[in-house]
Each structure stands twice: as C-alpha cells, then as structure tokens.
Length: 454
Ligand code: UD1
Ligand code: CA
Image 1 (cartoon, rainbow, N blue to C red):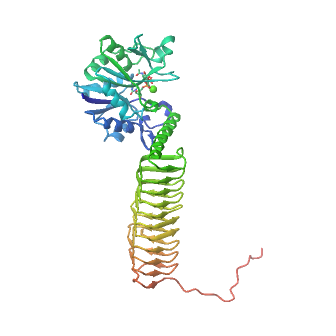
Image 2: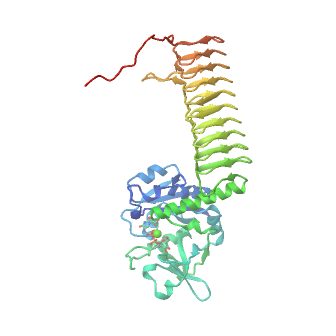
Image 3: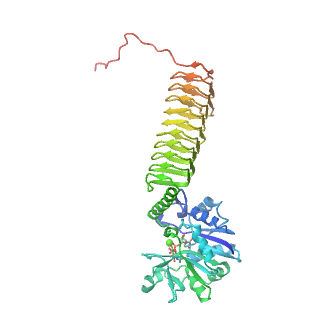
C-alpha cells in the first residue's frame, strides 16, 4: 500500500466549551480527545503524523509530544483548507494524506482501513443523517457520482434536502492535494478557505471520488460543547460495557460503569454499580468488585472480593483476598494471597504477607508485614518524623494489639505479641509479649467536678 501521511486538525478554538483549556485536550474516557485520534492514527502505521494546532499556546504540542511527529501552528485560522495547507510543506509527495480531526475522537481503525482500500483517487467519509443541518452536503449527479460538497451556509434550498453529509475525514493523493489546496479561494458565505472545495476540483480533473461510510455512527461524531462531550462519553462507556459483557463479565448495570483506561477480566467476574477503572486494571477469575469502588492501575488476583467503596491505586492484590468496605490501597501496596484489609484501613508502599489481616481503622505505611499477622484495630505505623520516612517490619505470626503505634524504624519479631494501646519505639523480641502502657490505677473516692455558683 502507498505510504500514508496523517494530518490531524486541532486548531479550532472550541468557544462553546467555555474553557481555558484547548478543546482537544478535554478528556473522554480518561484521555484527551486528540489522544484518541492519535492512537487510532498510530495504529495505521503512517510515515508521519502532523497535528495542526492553534489556541492554547503550546499546551497541545506539550501534552501530545510523544504521539505525533510534528506540530504545526495555524495562526490565524482561516478555514479547514487553510489548516491543511499549513501541514503540506512537511509531507512527502509519494504518499497519500489522510485528514482527521482532533475533536472527532472515536474514529476507528477499521473504518479508516476501509477508506484506504476504497480506491486511489479522493476518498470521502460520509454519513446519512436524519437531520443534516449544519453539515456540508454531498452533491451527486443523477448517476450517483459525487460532484462536490456544498456547505450549509452556501447551499441552495434543494441542496439542503440532501441527507448525506461530509464528516470532514478524507484521504487524498498528496501531490494532488497540494495542487488543489494551492488553488483554493475564500469567496464563500464564511470567507474561509474550505477544504471541501477540493472535491469539485478533483471531479473537474477526472480524478475518481469514492465514498465510504463508517461502521458506527458515533465514530464521526464531533465535540463542540460539554453536552456533546458527555453524550459521546456515554456512547464510549456503553461500547466498553458491551464488550465486557460479551466476554462474560457480569455488570450489575452497564449504564453505571466507567472505564477510563484498559480493563481486563478473567472468567466469572462481577462488577457492581458505580465502579471506576482507570489506567490498566486486571481482574482475575471470580473477582467481585463492590459498588462505587475506584480501581486504578492495579491487578487483583482470582477469587478476591472487593467490598463497596474501596479505593485501589497502583497496587498488586493476590488471590482470595478480602478488601473493604472502605479500604484504601495506595501506590506500592502488595498484598499476598488471602490477606484481609477492612474498613478504614489505609496501606501505602507496603507488602502484606499471606493470610495477614488489618481489618479495622489502621494505617500501614512503608512496612513489610509477614504471613498470618493480625493487626488490631487502630494500629498506626509512625513512618514519618517530619523529614524522613522509615520502615516497619512485622514478622510472621505476630499479633499487634489494638491502638498500637509502631514508631519506625522498628521490627516486631516473629510470633511476638504487642499489648493493646502500646507505643513501640524499640524492636520487640520474637515470641514474647511486649507492651508499653502505664499501669491502670483507681483513685478512691474521686469526685466529678460540679458547676460553680454564679
Ligand atoms: C466542516 C466541513 C463540513 C463538515 C463538517 C463536519 C469544511 C469547509 N466544512 O464544517 O463539510 O460537514 O466539518 O463536522 O471543511 N479547523 C482548524 N482550523 C481552521 C478551521 C477549522 O483546525 O481554520 C478544525 C476545527 O478545529 C475542527 C475542524 O477543523 O476540528 C472542523 O472545523 P469547523 O469550523 O467546525 O468546520 P465545520 O464548519 O463544522
Ligand atoms: Ca464542526
């Protein structure tokens, strides 16, 4: 196949977003609109990708640097034809050029591939709409061959009846495109250089014009405001939910799932309502995720049960663990199989051994916890002295009484027991009971204070 150049138009202001951020950097399914387009573009293995940007200073090139080969500033913005012109000096002649849009995020590889197969002339991606208002219309002759595209504002009453519209996405031989663009004028209703005017030029020169339609209507949906952004987000999420269910995942409600990254599931996974998955998440066989859990960049081993409202971030969880409700695993947490982390327990940068439990109200930070350890309610590792962080080591089979503070660096020996309410500042011997509490005393005859006379 002929080599491919891809131009992504992303210079529009996005006035209707009412935002300081360039439109194409607003997020859909957890990543910028234009990043969706760039990832799809990359999947076609083009020779180069060139992004035409305008508003927002260097924000677009900075954010998308690693996805494109080149960023070209279009200033001022004089129309879609003018935008494409800005990229032309950088393109190789012996190639074809595909034009995509930074605010049309869900275009799919398969549709673009179909365009590449459609022919060697000019290939337009078109779609039939019940309400074509606002779009450029595809004008055909009685034989059905494309003659031109006419913009809404330039169309006759008859042309406005046409339901087939221009999505804007097109593929053209680069040398021809260069020639046609150089001849564009702006004598039209909007005083803009219309990319769409190249269609009539192609027809005039006898270059064949082909049309392709997208597999899904939403692939060519553009975003101009927050309502359209939210609508397309739902479409995307429905599509993700549909694919998960097709693979056998049980979703309590496919309309209440948000995947903002990549979610991979084993067999018989169940996900309750309101869960959010970010980054790359792997759920093993039979994992159950309770309602309103937020899981980001994590792997969860088979058979593990995640109770509602659990937050997991950049952590690795073994098999058959029990988490939550209301547990929080922060970055660097590693739970071995059968560990239990219960309500209001926070774990950070720590390894918890097989079968160990921290079921209530604890903070475990920068710690290495062995196997079969029981961490009582309200236990806190004091890992930070205000300047530096230190590790706590709790060896296998230790039992930490409730409301214990372990002041790091400190090691609790194998099988050691710590009495409830202790503040442990020195290493504790294996197999022994250590506690640090003042003796309980009773003051005989003590009276409660009473209110004084006024
Ligand atoms: C364009 C098409 C129209 C098509 C419609 C699909 C033209 C003349 N018209 O119309 O046939 O039905 O898209 O949505 O092409 N842009 C730039 N620089 C510019 C102008 C636009 O980068 O100077 C970018 C915008 O950011 C946007 C895209 O090009 O992503 C389309 O521009 P827009 O002004 O929205 O074109 P439409 O009038 O909608
Ligand atoms: Ca538009």
